[in-house]
Image (cartoon, helix red, strand yellow):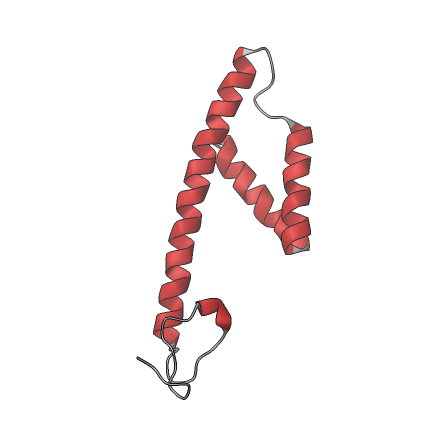
Length: 99
């Protein structure tokens, strides 16, 4: 049990630096875990995207829907700023299967 003067190591990482608790190695470990989660999510998104593409094409549509991609670009830009659109473009490229 911690007192008010002792750091609580169970605090969420988003709470900010905790002197005596945070270290570069710990923080990098958290970043690595997030990067692995992002990669898993993009892989999952790519699988869903392939299913959407196959369904759309089987119904006479195109593989890529530019209007939908514009919405995705805007969503990332709104959430992350100008560079968010660059991230969205990379995600869309991966999900289109052009690696």
